[in-house]
Amino acid sequence: MIDLFFELVSGYGAIVIALATFLSCLFLPVPSSVMMLAGGAFVASGDMSLIAVLGGAFTGAVLGDQVGYRIGRWGGPRLSAWLARRPGRAAVLARAQATLRHWGGVGVFFSTWAVAPLGPWVNVAAGGAGMSALRFTIWDMAGEAIWVTLYVGLGYSFAANLDMLASTLGNAVGALSAGVVALLLGWVLIRRVHRDQANA
Amino acid sequence: MTRHLWKRHRTLFLCFLVAVGLMLFFGGRAVMFSLRWDAEALRTQPLAGWMTPRLVSYAHDLPPEVLFPMLGLDPDATPRRMTLEEIAKAQGIPTDRFLAELAARIADRGDYQ
Image 1 (cartoon, chains in turn brown, purple):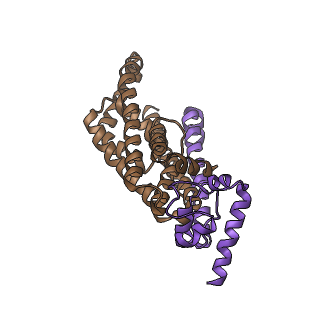
Image 2 (spheres, one colour; image 1 turned 45 degrees about the vertical axis):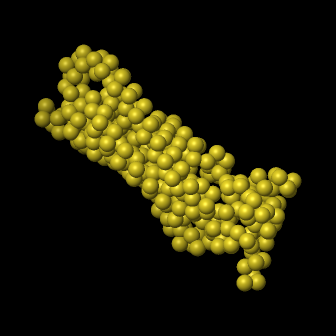
Image 3 (cartoon, each protein chain N blue to C red; image 1 turned 90 degrees about the vertical axis):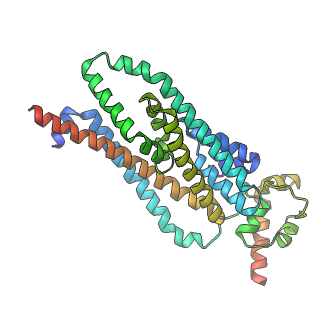
């Protein structure tokens, strides 16, 4: 299965890496990290140029994130207007938006590389919460630069053991992302319980 | 506490449990793969159709001047990113057999070093 994605990279080059990072930043389950690893390995072997691999992956990722952010920007006000019709929901919404405005930049930064599976959600949420385009783009580009360099660099360093590397990394990222979701849900649960106790 | 969560916040609590479960599942697999690293990392991964001659040359530490003639290729005239599968097809040999023969030739060379 993984071989198929390696083959796409050897067959079509940097364009397919750009397309993969673009689509994976837009909720589509494309294993762009695997393809960046392959790109790195082909740089090590002399089949591809470093500039093309890094440039392609980075451009695709940043463009994909921008589209997600724009979707949030466009859909956010409509969704907020609908949510805010009930006072209870309006309060929760206001708090969520305030949290995102305060922590959003850092959230966008880490969601692009450390917990990449959460990235598309964060992009749309950032747009929906009305984070400024400049702030989003700066944090986003900084994070994507790390993501792209990390994976291409690992592929370059471990070119002889690509499939082992892809399996280990993929599972580690999955665990980290599920862990972040568990932490967030746990935090919300604790707050709810405290509120229940205060009301009792 | 658990009963309270189950009664009052069932959906959220279930989502939390699923997230913890996924974390343990992926974490366990990551640890499993990383433990196999020591043994496997020393051994270069087996040849596959998607690999290019240059990648094989790099991974197996075989200079192109040695490897390319084994494939019936000229190192200077071979396009980049051409895969072993494409080379096998061009020579009219089934990919599996082509890979097996190449692996055997690489192994032979190792013996004579």
